[in-house]
Image 1: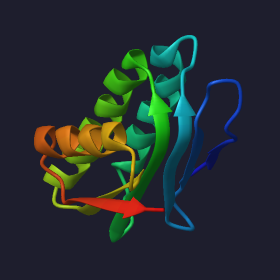
Image 2: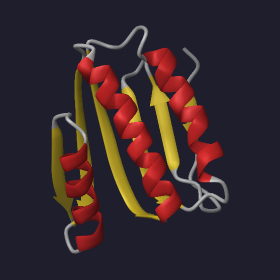
Image 3: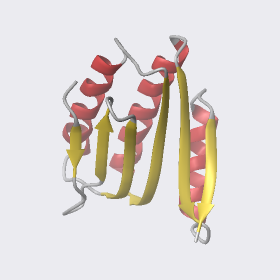
Image 4: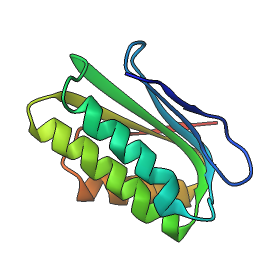
Length: 125
């Protein structure tokens, strides 16, 4: 599978989706002008990934900030991972948040309550 490797810049988050090396990372700030278009490529990649997953998939979220439009698309991505999980695949989400950032902690907690995937909230300094 082709690797998605998007560097964080101009309101776009860093995204790495690398099946071969087992790297699934979303980090930084997500404020794209058209969140639906930006995340559509990620959803399409996950559709392909769902056909032949790794034995275990660990997804790391280390977001600093995201706008409302991105929140909806992040949920879409998480729901795609939930579909893959419900197909019998071993998936876990690690949601990192700055230990003083209540907004990112609460966002992670809300996402964890919506999707049925093993979800770990991890503070860092």
